[in-house]
Each structure stands twice: as C-alpha cells, then as structure tokens.
Amino acid sequence: MPESDPKRLLARRLFDAVISQVPLVGGPYAALLSVTHPSQLEQLQTAWQSNITEAVNQMESIVSQLLPSITISNEASAIALWISKTSKLGREDPVAFSDLCGALPHFTKLSLEDACGELEYDGLATLSAAIGHKIVRVRPTHLLFEVFDPAVFEDANPRLDAARIARFILTKDDTVGAEEIMKHFGWSVRRYNPAMGIVSSMIDEGRKSAEIHPTIDCRFVMPNSRERAALRHFSNEVLGSVS
Image (cartoon, rainbow, N blue to C red; front, side):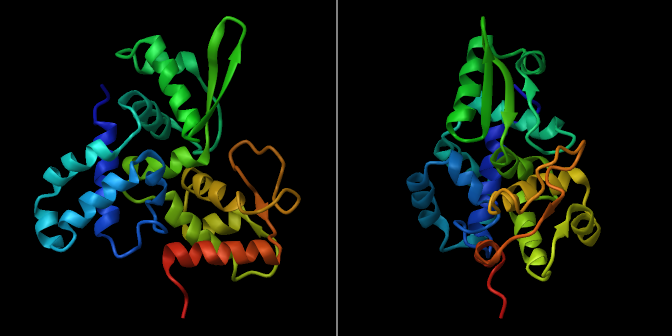
C-alpha cells in the first residue's frame, strides 16, 4: 500500500469539514461527498457534533468511524492520490496506465483496471482504450484534484481557491487572465489549475480560452451576466455572503 492510507487521509478531511464553521454541503470539502455515503456521515455527525471539544480530542477514533462511510475503494483512492501527488500542473492531462502499474506494483493489473473504472464511474477520471488494451490512458477530471488535493497539500484546497477566484472575477468588468489571478493570490500554476477548472466549468465555450497552453489550463475568462450570477452564488455558498 502507499506510504499513507489514502482513505484515512480522506476521513481526516471529512472530520475537518464537519467541525469547521463552513457548511459541509457548500464548503471547501463538499467534493468529498462524491466518494462518501451521505447517510452514514450524517449519522456519525449527529452522534458527536454536540461536543466538538470531545470530538477533537478523540479525532483518530472518529476518523476510524468515518472510514466505512467512504465508498471509494482502496485501489481507486490510491490511484487518485498518486495522480494528485505526482501531477506537476494539476490539470486534466492523461496518465499512462502502464505508469500506474509501475507506481502501484502491489495491485494486480485487473484490480487497477477495475479501480480506474471506478474513478470514471465516480466522475474522477475518463478512460481511453485500444485494441488489446482495456485501458491505455487515465485522464483525471478537476473533481479528482478537488477531492484529493486537500489530502496532499496542507495549504491548498481547490474548491476554496475556486471560490476566491470567483469572487475576484466578480470585482472585474472585463476579461480576467490567469497571470493576473496567480499574481493576485501568489499561487503557482499547480495550485491555480485545479481551482480554475472548477470556475471555468461554470462558463460556456466562447467566453473562456480554448487554446492549448503548455502549462495553464484556462488562460482567461469573460463571463456574461448569467455566469457571473453562477459565480456569485458559488462563492457565497463556499465563503459566505458578502454583507
């Protein structure tokens, strides 16, 4: 298995989300719900949220209780965590299946194929095949980085970052570019790309860059009024409404 248990890292992020002041559904860890059984999570939350201090003191015990609520398999979470860790740009660049086999030799080829299929089913990746090969490439979606980056990087969370970008865009009445955003927040391309992937998904083709750039996922956006409303709703949901 990997150096760190991927599902345990996710469980810790779920714990952080439940005790945070930001609502779980709209907050920075909402993407985790895509790989979690919501009803089990709600039952666990209700059982101990009345005494947060005690819960914090028993964090590891509660993390163990949260683990069964995470529906994604060990194999799939290990693949996703490895992609998040090794991605230099944090965008939807394909990963060769052969590289996954080499990086995770403790899993069989069949178990890795099934795990990749699970990632596709959960919307965390898309797969490409070829004659004689079930899977040739695994292309992560921005949701994969949204779920797993918080388990890899202590100082970055794509959903929270996306909300900050959205709010920054709303202060502008013209085209907003990648370089301007990264300079404003002091972010690297690796941190920018996953967050901008979330933001750009709210903006239709024709009002965002379609060019293929060596490192930047989306070089500029120019949202219309409807899209600005979507960005405002999203940023308020995650960051709280601006008074």
